[in-house]
Image (cartoon, rainbow, N blue to C red; front, side, top):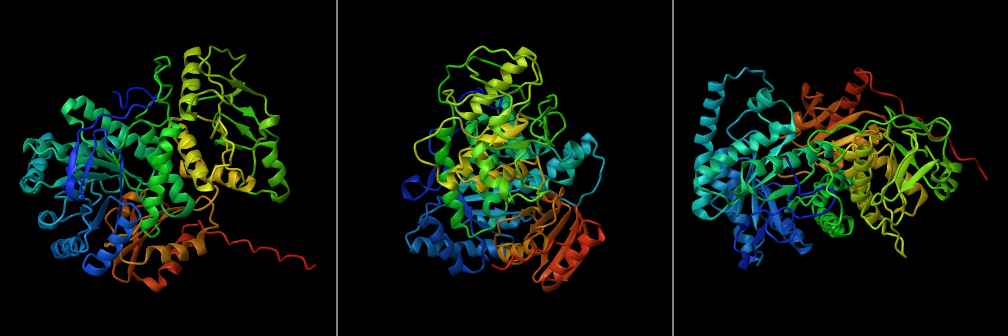
Length: 595
């Protein structure tokens, strides 16, 4: 199976065009040769018409091209009529997407008023109760027949009204039926979406796109690659557009890094026709990140095909770290083998940060580039290595983008039968001016994240970020976001929408203030139960909106406390962390000495 023409050069996937609204009157065309479309989602109650209009106008003002609104009930879906009417009165023609979970009747109502209806196959006429059920082939087909009966009326209506459909699976909300047949896997996500696509195609309806979202960038990358490969297998007329997103990415640098790893990696593979960066922040901030990320792709990809045809060194559909021998870096630190991916710095960065590093600090250099015995290689040329314990990297100025250069290096090493540890660099070319910090963050995240997700890399070096301390912290943040290291508390936080039952930004800040010292603990903060129990399945603890003013607490995906008053919930979460032996007291900073 192939997910792209070659991992060594950029070629945009050829997808069919789909119409979202009237392109002549504010609508957009997704797919084909059209630019990537950027979108976001409202965070307010869908029954608050004026606030929905205000937030939509704010998003459009900063360049948002599609706006998603949740419709949890028929009543909310019916109010989309008033929201769309008010927007059109304001002269705003942006396409509106209704986000549907659980309620087919809400989807049928929403289709009357909006340009796009998004359905989640995991909970549209299907169920998620974490039940283990043995499905015979006949039982499975009977369930598919029931889903067909529930889904077909929506397809027929969308086709008659000229609407668009998004078939959006989420890693956190696969149905029990899919889980029992395929497990909690990328294959399960893909097959869940294809089942719904087959129903749409049976009605000769093709105005739809797919999405495969996860809070884990590596899982998300595998899912989209597998989806595209499966679509290729189905036939040339299955070339439907793809929407990219990392769900529950969080806020601040962490949210931007996770999104850049997942979305940016796939864009560099030539996949993706529309994107959303999901941040636990005010929605307009997502659009700036979307635009900045899309702008980097031409600069980070190889547009030339003047490279040898080579099989990749990695399995694109199942993550496995490339196996290498262990080597020493600096005193106390080794790389390769089963060691974590290490952080290397330049001598200049070492000189800046070393005096400030405390003994036993979690964020610290683990090697100095200039002191390493590293063989620098031009991967376009033939080369040899003396032994497998020789650390190798791509030389500066190879005339190739970073991702291409290191993939080519790893492929040639594999062809030589060599398993040398590889030092990854975030950049191998340098401009006259230092990069703006937000751009340095995105480029480093895409370049290093894409390669780490391929299983390539035993140590990383960041030089695109000129600040010494910032570059060191960024390296660790990338490794944590990619699932390679855990040096601080990890948060899975949804971006908020009209379903959210508490103020996510405020609550996230309160939880972080109490727990951000818990190294290695993963906490999920979810506004509602749509993706809550599933998406946070690999979290240690979950804080989930259960009802207005009420919180449910989870251990993994198991609910353990229900209907806690919101004002007590953070304290109860801390108590739960203590109960399960994950709590440590925060160290009190020593007072500064008097002058």
